[in-house]
Image 1: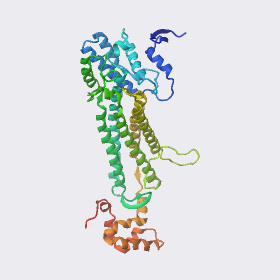
Image 2: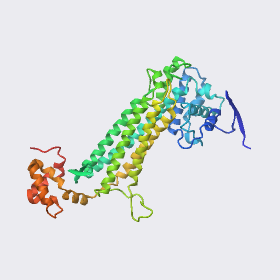
Image 3: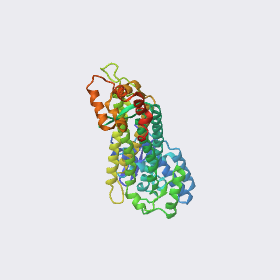
Image 4: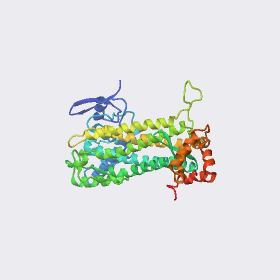
Length: 446
């Protein structure tokens, strides 16, 4: 039979495996929330270990926690590895994150190997309601920084394509119909600019997460925590994390309201929106044979030789998931009640998942973009055949004359409109007007 140990709380006793690294609070949570799927993000657990270390440092410096206990807790926090634990607690837990907080308290206490109480010592002067949101912000800031780096690489990949395709004239399309000429490089330059905005927004929105409520305890009043601790603990957290964090001026507000997370999630949704739009465009350009996407895997179990744009499809699905997560974050933030947001666990899971998914998507797309090639011959054929290139000649011949040229060409059985224009207007005029430099000159010179 498995050896067990008995632990108790005010609800009664629970038998726990004798070698378990957690305690009764975690055991009850695992039993209460046997929910498959989403688990507490590992990045959040790691961030919470940093918060616990900061709290121990503050309590030690102020003499509220004896040196031996504080040193043991600090060491346990520093050595804490999420991967060392075989179970995962559901992110859909009730209790505003209390189960996760208590799990960390118990894991850290047991890891010390000393007579350290998970609540009296590890959780000293803390509440789930200030520890958990603070840990979410720490994890999210780290996530944003990693994501910004991935977006930077993606932006760079598309800037390279912008330069590579700058000399290739093509037809722009509006409402899925051929419109006016531009260059293929300009199309990819527009994508690079969109990613540049994503990078900037992602970098800047870190500011929204730097204000934390650590020290506010249950509802932001700091009840049960010494004033000296409240003023010191965020300073210690800055030292532990290396992040520019500050204590909120109104901790009741910071504890009760989660709108900052909604704002950050909106930035993630904007990035997802760009990924969806741009990947959709790349699929169309590939279908229209203007570009060639890298072939990465066989596309069909029945159609020999078929290759599908699977990377783009995967990135688009990530975009859809992130947009759905934004709704979850928004809904969770709006359903908080009075002095607490009891739906913070789901909010945290959705927000941190979005950052990880977007990072993966940006990495996949950047790598894929490196192999994108232009089909210059096909671009030239389509360009020369389109009557819409006549728009570039309006400053020279006017609208009525341009219309006459189009109508006259359509009465022939010819397919190369550019050559027809050469015959009508002269080669020098046509080549100069349709050069990539002229098409991208931002207006004509009168």
